[in-house]
Amino acid sequence: MKQLTGTTLCLAMMSIALPALAADLSVTMHKATQDGTGEELGTITIAPASDGATLKLQLHGLPPGAHGFHIHANANCGPTLLNGIRIPAGAAGSHWDPDMSAKHAGPEGEGHLGDLPRIDVGDNGTATQTLTAPRIKDIEALKNHALIIHAGGDTYSDNPNLGGGGGRIACGVIE
Image 1 (cartoon, one colour):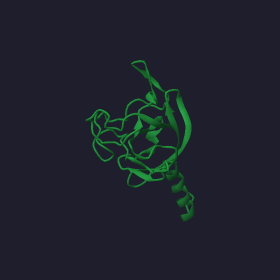
Image 2 (image 1 turned 45 degrees about the vertical axis):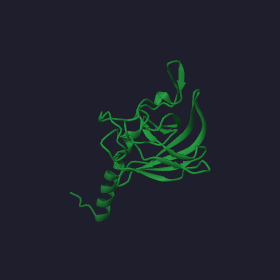
Image 3 (image 1 turned 120 degrees about the vertical axis):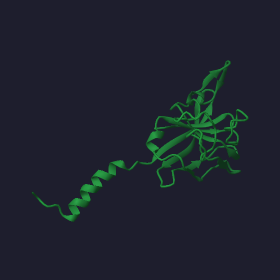
């Protein structure tokens, strides 16, 4: 039987380990409108990290201030109808909640896994921050969902019902 050299053994181990490394995900964000997706607002890059997934924002054209930010259940940014009114990005569904917690508890709480840290948009309409989602360990599980930015800040509470930040102003499909 042929003996493996140190280099051969190292290469063999790397070929086994490399497929386990997840590639970064890039999500193009668009303005959410009653007619569907509007103008492009930038990108969000999702990467694995030892302390959870990181989300690097390179966004523009947003209203200044704090905004709720979530992963939603469906990979669809289209509008839906509610009582005859078109809801921007309504087809994204509700917050991603694979554990069926049925509660809104923030990115570090025991609620929806889709609860992400708030986005802070500067006076010039840009958000260029890097956020950490500590409970998201497998970024591949995010595929076939949507990222939503809400009109207002997030209270990380189920009370009031719009604790997640209200209307949807931006959406991107995670592919």
